[in-house]
Image (cartoon, rainbow, N blue to C red; front, side):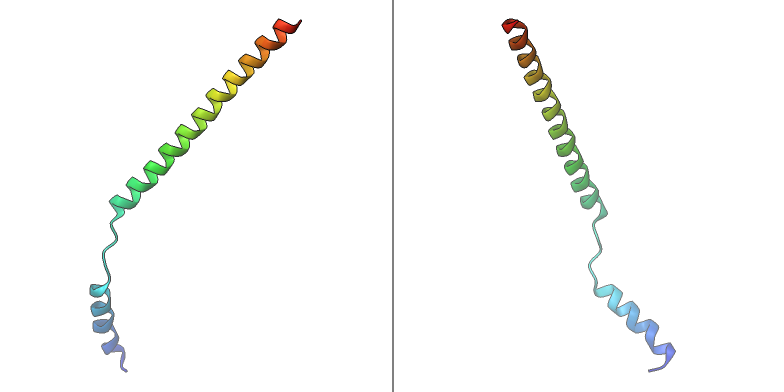
Length: 62
């Protein structure tokens, strides 16, 4: 195979590959980040509530 034969074969092969949809990938990454952010906020809120309950119980005991 000569070097001149390689370029047309590469172009033909590239034409057969599907184009990646980068917008869908970015959207999915954004949704995953948003879910992670919500989860972290929920854990922090629940921790603050639990600490407030624990503090009120300890104050009530003493």
